[in-house]
Length: 294
Image (cartoon, rainbow, N blue to C red; front, side, top):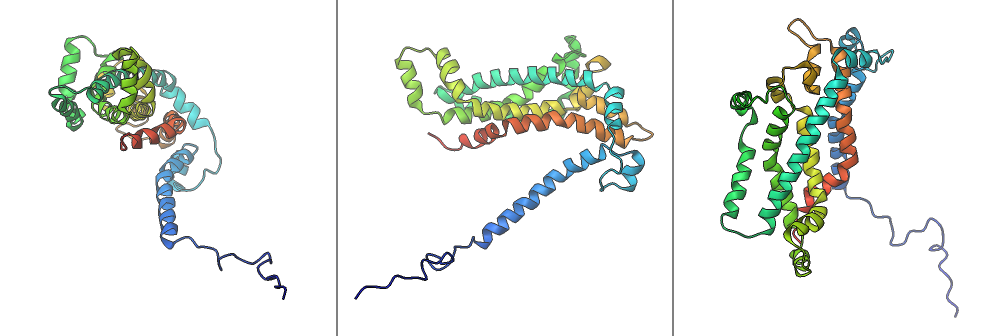
């Protein structure tokens, strides 16, 4: 007897296996918590930008609402009054030079500590890591006296050198962790082919360590670009003031122009957001790559 085809299974609404699998409740809860955390993180940025287009009166009467008549007048006035063009150039010079020095010195130290075995290696690494425990603001007075004695106050180098020194500990730690994850066989093959240690460092280890160095570069950029205390103490010349110092012009002992302050802060934060968005993938790679060896 010929078997009749199963007509029900051929219908479009028929499901194989009975019913579609549902996502677990824990996944929905996790996504909801992450979305809530993202909103909490992004809201201050949103509030900053909408406040930049408000007058002082509107800032106090409608602090959380959108501006009624958005205008770029605050941006233009803040840019001119604070001299933000020159301040941004000074911050760029200090940040870029300090970041280059940090990457060069940090990569060289990390290469020696991660790829070689020698006596006191652990002690030297611990010595560098101790720098992460030193509160940088506790060194303001000694650094001021030292820079004054050598005639380096009111120069870009008064900020570049201290920035580099205090960021080296973290740079060495992160880059060394990433270099340790590079297989030893790569190094041995290069040495067998007649490549020297400088060639090994410049042509193989350094290119492979780009994600780790990108992480260091972004963290250093954020620290250097937003640093205020060192710039306030070591720089007195108006022509050399950095961006954080230019923002303080809108606040004095008698009051604060919140509209101009928010506009200036919105301008100052844009480069940070752009740099992070460009290199965010490299940051994630650098953060997790050193955790897995091989």
